[in-house]
Length: 46
Image (cartoon, rainbow, N blue to C red; front, side, top):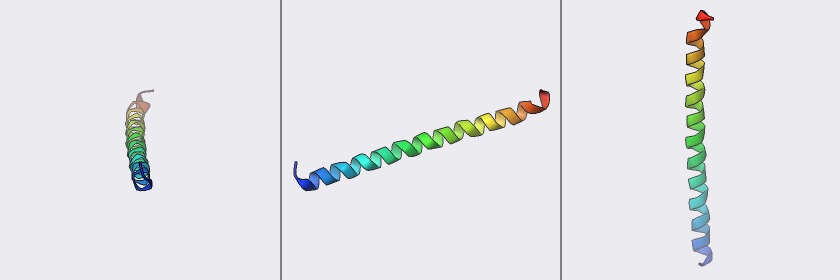
């Protein structure tokens, strides 16, 4: 593997990691929004 291929591999790995982190963050936000909505719906009944 030459230097150019190594750099390309590092860039691809970096973008793959960024994509994974973004998907994870989006899912956490989605869960938080659901819990917030769910909690605010049941709050008057407590």
